[in-house]
Structures are given as C-alpha cells and as structure tokens.
Image (cartoon, rainbow, N blue to C red; front, side, top):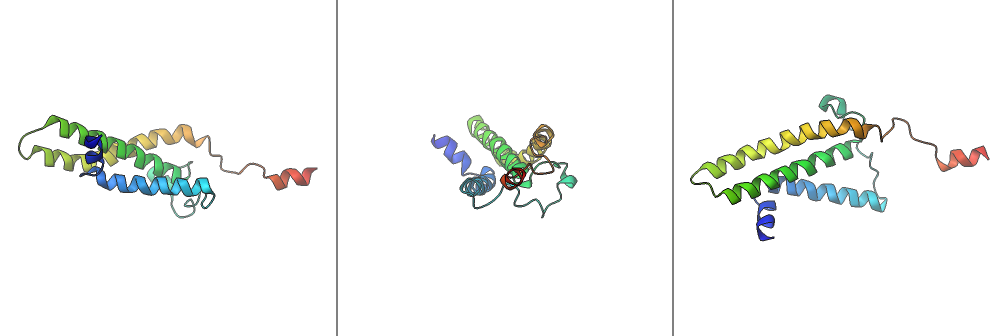
Length: 133
C-alpha cells in the first residue's frame, strides 16, 4: 500500500493526482445537485480535439482518469524495475508526456460509443408531460 501511495504522490503522477482530486470533487458536486454535468459545454469547442458529442466534463474526466492510471502504473513499474543511474528520472520524464498522450488517444476512442448516450436535444421534462394531460 505504501508503494502505491508513494507512486501516486511522486513525480510524475502527482500532477494527475491533483487533477483527479478536482474531477472527483466536481462529480461530488454533480451528485449533490450543485453543478450539472454539462456545466462547461458552452465554454469549450470539443470538435477541435475530436471529442464532440460528449459533455466536456465527461470527456475531461475520462482523460484525467485514464492518464492518472497510466502514470501510476508506469511509476510503479519504474520503481519495481530498480534501474541504475540516470535512467529512472529520464523514463519518469518520458512518462510525464506519454501518459497524457495515450490518455487522449484512449479518450478519443471511448467518445464515439459514449456520444450516443448524450443526445443533442434534451428529452421531455416533467412540465412538458404535465401540459399534455
């Protein structure tokens, strides 16, 4: 357990651990009703990143979670390998850039099937149904 905690709070995973804490905090606010899952949709153009069709918060959450997991896994593997010399810091630096890149690619692949779950137009509300009766 200590090795996992050291990896989560060490370089390079610490950057994505902080982002993951923000993501978890946001989704807790959504669960409490203080924010909506589409709260950031008017601010960002997701077509440029090839993430269209999904709320920005969902796409960003997937990106951060996958990147954190990749970074954490890489940090644990690097620690277990016990490589000599200056190789571990260089590989950690490579991991800092590689984990977000792979996470972006994975997020782009996951967006396509998930976009069908988030239609462009909202469904009927309770008021619409009440007006029909």
